[in-house]
Image (cartoon, rainbow, N blue to C red; front, side, top):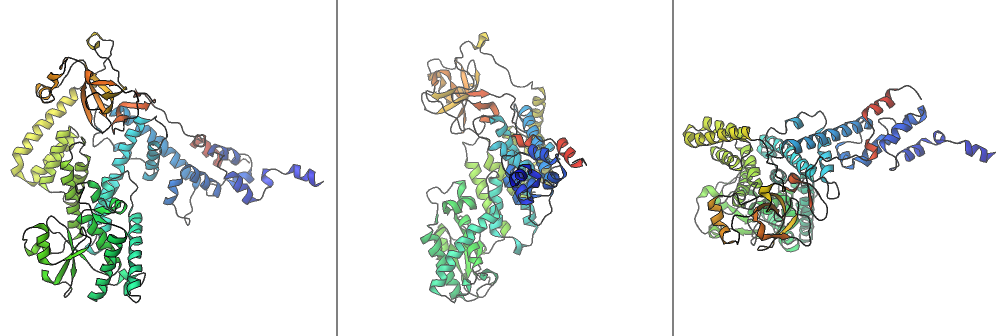
Length: 596
């Protein structure tokens, strides 16, 4: 009898918790859950839109998105699933349209207008772009290329908005660490950088300092977990904190100023300072100042020429006498300096104004200024990305700075991108400073000529090796080559039947010394170091060990690496796993029907 009853048990006879556990199994897809919910009222109730089953389905498919939800919220997980699914389809459509629209030109500044009008949450769209970027294998290179450009733009727009909100706050609500993180995020928008994570790492260092203080003085006020909320008034107690900071930062954790590679942009990014434990004076000062304040010691930033410093008051708080302060060199392992020693540090005398405290905005201005100077020094990066990013940041803080507006206009003009935006910038400059009329007029004239030429362009020329004029061309697009003289690895993305460069370039590159001179095929190649070069046929040979070329523009020209060569762009298709093939129409049918 018991055996007969057991045989008659079905899925709907199981307890609710066990039923949920089965339906949350990761081998089931969204379509499976939809079909189960159509069978009867019992199973439909188990698959309620706000229930555990659809939440688990959402989590399994997009685990990184759960951080946007609170456990206290009443969420229709089915609706969220549908919205994320639609956002994915829209993201794919937009990425595909980018590859068609912008292959032969730079993405214009208004090229992202269709993204800005999307009806879905921005983090849904960004998550789909990340899914594209994280696709395994050597396919989808074109989609990855444009997904990266779109994600770069979206995140920078959001960070710029956050920066402007930060700058509008009262000065006492502007954390130096938060400002440094915003700069870091804007210059590295594809990296996983957030204030919470950076603050957690700083808190960890602060706790180490607190332990050292406790061993020296168990009754020290900084030992309390919330010591940073109240400043320590006694100078001697402050000194104990600073001594402990120097011990932890420079002796235990081995932080140091990067003297050997001072002009590396990584020294300016606070998350890299924490990872590499090295930096330049201003980035190390922001870290040092933040830790000190969390332990109840008020240090202030000093915009000292050539070497950023912090100052520590030894006299009456708020004193204007520069000799009432000791100056701290975070780059020099926390060394404390007198006024005279500060001058020895830079090798010349400076006036009292350079010993004064500066605001958080002025600290950010100097940080961005350092990046601007590094951007001007970079000659290998043909996109000048660091210079462009740092100019954006500077003009977000000082939108009417004529010097930097002119630099931005000239940069875009030099790169041949965004001519319409160049005209807008020049018009703004002319309104701010009519004395710039000559320089503005010159750029306006040539920018208008560029716009007219662009209208006449008919697109890239299609070349066929079978044509008589190309009979000397020996190598095909997509082949992995090696340069005979310089040894670099590269991939061919274009060719000319003979050298098409001017006489000056031919002379400077000593092309005439080649056996065939300029009268031989020349190839456009993407080089493994990130550069683009123009190489003579006789200088190239097949690479016997072909491998992928890590060039940022590889996806613009190629869709896939086969293991031996690259395939030129074709229409790509990314297919979702089975669980995303549940259409919105099916879902609507499931939950609008009254049938069991």
